[in-house]
Amino acid sequence: MHGHHCLNASIPHIYGHVDAQILYGLDPAKAGQLVPCVIFGVTSIPSRALHFSILLESGAQWARIPLQMLRWELPTVAPRPLTDLQMWDCHGWDFAITHYDYLREMSCTYRLRDGSLVPASYWFTLDHTDNGFSNYPPEHKCYHLLKLEDGSGQIAAMPNNRILWHDASFCHPTPEAAPDYKVMAPTTWHAEGERESAQLTAYTRD
Image (cartoon, rainbow, N blue to C red):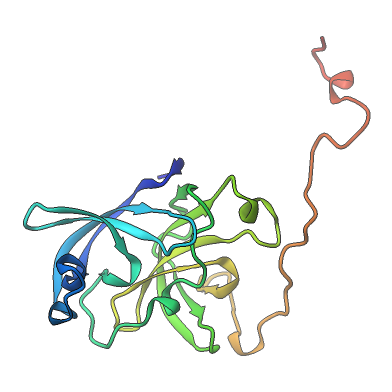
């Protein structure tokens, strides 16, 4: 699954649950009551968290359900706050959706602001385009959508620099002694940087 989108996009659908309070005007009496749903779409609005489209067993379809209200599995522990699930608001309206075959269902851990680690597994990737943040290499961040495996049943959207992936045949991460990598430099790279035209040495020419 891939493609370029504006505002809304289809995603690899999963069966999960939604916190009923969002369905009843944030009624606190409904908080924690989980309703089965299918999660099938995502919405990106600048300066807001990711939102999702869902279908309920009643036949009702809801749009713009915030990330923290969803569960991919029934929880056994208390939910995490939104700030533990998405570190940065959306960068723009335009984005690409990619489901990387190599990362399919791969386990990982991501790092919270306090340095603690949360176990999770891969769902899909959302990458913003055509905005000043995403076009500037040091500020670019994609969002890997992850299914938390900490008992909360929640979903997170984390950038590359907060995740360690677990491919036992290749990766040997040591979170307590992680490399001190730096963010991407502001340099951009261009194939047409040479003064001499590549067309001059092509097999077919103008």
